[in-house]
Image 1: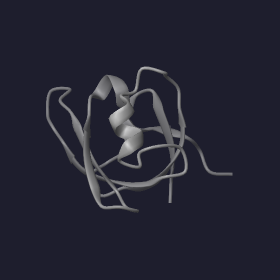
Image 2: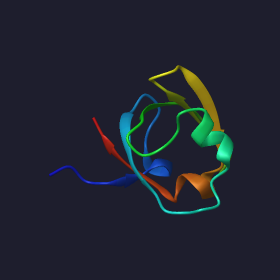
Image 3: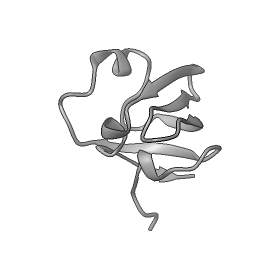
Image 4: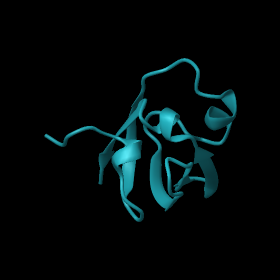
Length: 79
């Protein structure tokens, strides 16, 4: 069985399927862009010094920048 990993632990180029979002404080804009459980994402960029993480939602090719603190609350399975 695959292990869940938080998005902040993924490396650039990793492709993963979002498993759960463990916070109600994730901005609604993320959901509007297709960033929700079941979505396949690819990590495109990680800023240094705890900066944001840029992920691509594969389904609709939307780029989303999320804070590292938000990324810790989102779990995914690498595919």
